[in-house]
Each structure stands twice: as C-alpha cells, then as structure tokens.
Amino acid sequence: MIAELLIENDKLDIPCHLAIIMDGNGRWAKSKGLPRVAGHRKGAEAARSAVESSIKYGVRYLTLYSFSSENWRRPIGEINDIMGLLREYLLNQINELDSNGVRLRVIGERDNLDQDIKILIEEGEKSTKSNTKLDLIIALSYGSRAEIVNATKRILNNFDLGLIKPNDLSEVLFESYLDTAGIPNPDLLIRTSGEKRLSNFLLWQLAYTELVFSEVLWPDFGEPNFTDALYEFTQRERRFGEINSLRIDEN
Ligand code: FPP
Image (cartoon, rainbow, N blue to C red):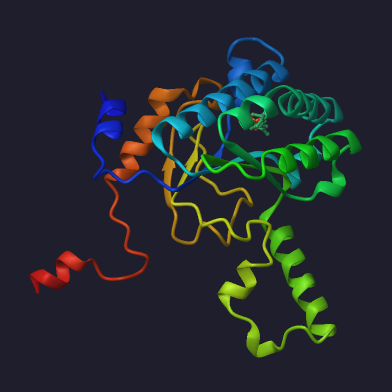
C-alpha cells in the first residue's frame, strides 16, 4: 500500500541521500540461539535488499554504516567474520551492482583494511565509476571524528604549502576535504534496533537530516520497513533552521 503510494505519487519526496545505521545483528542472532556471525550474514542480505529498494524507489545515494572505527575493538573472531562477509560481498556483488547502474564508493580509513579487501574496493570503485543510477557508499573502518581530524590535517598541510589562506576556509571548502566530498548531505537517516544514537556516523553531514528510528533488528529490515521509513520522511516538514513558509503567510 505505502509502496504503491510512493511509486505513484510524484509529489511525495523521496530522500535523495539515505544513510542507514544497520544495528541489531547480534541481538537478532541471540534471539534465535545462533552465533553472531549468522546475524551479520543475514544483515548482509538485508543490505542487498536495501540497495534494491533504493533503486526501486529512486533514492540516488545510499550510505551504509558497515564497520565503525570503534568496531575494531570487538573480538578478533567477530572482526574476521564481518571482514569475510564484506570480502564475499565485494567479490560476488560488484558485477551485479555494475549491471544495475550502481556506483560503489567506500569511505573510512582504508589503511586499516586487509590488502586484498583494499584491492577489491579499488577495483570495484574503478569499474563502477561511470554508473549514475545509485551511489552505494559503504562506510568501512569509518568514524566521523577521525574523518574531521583528517580533513583538518589536509587543510593545514595545504596551508603550509601556501595553497590556501585562513580566510579561504568556509563550510563549503571544509566539506570538500571530507570523505564524502561531492556527495550531498543525507536527507534521511534510519537507525534500526531501537537504539537512538549517532555512534560517530557522519556527524558533520547529518546537521539537518531527518532521523527515523525503527525498532526492527537490521537482519529483519525488509522492503516494507524501508517504505515505512520513506513514508515517514514524506510526512516531515524540513525547515533547515528557517521559519515555516506557511506561518509567514498566516501572519
Ligand atoms: C551492527 O550490529 C552491525 C555491524 C557492526 C556490522 C554490519 C555488517 C553487516 C551488515 C555485514 C556486511 C555489510 C555489507 C554492506 C555487505 P551489532 O553487531 O552491533 O548488533 P547488536 O547491537 O545487536 O549486538
């Protein structure tokens, strides 16, 4: 029902950029008496479904928080399991992503990743570079504070080289040093599993983003949950800190 409404009504706003904190894989596995890796595996399937839904409903950029800088503190076995799933995803999905017009981009601190994963990412980014249907941005070994510090370091470096002057610094210039340079800020953020935190995800970029928190655990998050969140977004009134235009008319 909501799906039809979203597809048929071109007056309903679809978020241009959707960002998702895919939370609850561990709890999903625990609730079924399964090892955590089973939750992550089902979570990777839910990620594939989110890509399909994004294409279907016309989302232009989809950012998935797949592994945070803080996730390196998890037990080594679980880190290896998640990296294994990502390796599998990159190996098996790139061709399909490419044939569906998806451009792959990865943000985060690549130096921490295994060499073969780095190569798969580089190849995937290169081979899908000219696709324009959907940009799939995977946040991997990503932390927003580190991203901001790294951007600042690069700006100071260019200052030392005489390439920029203090007065050149503006929000637009600063954004161009972030990992997300050239990508519009998210319109909608979904976090699953009932947690209501940003967890060091896109702190700069989410300044005016609408937030939707779903109780559903990420492995169970399918198309109906996706369209519910999109519909909730269409009901929001975005003001970007300004006064509502209706109220100006009314006064
Ligand atoms: C959060 O659940 C999820 C993660 C830390 C990993 C997310 C990884 C995937 C979905 C698999 C790979 C992704 C792609 C794009 C192929 P949690 O473990 O924190 O759950 P919990 O809070 O219930 O313990």
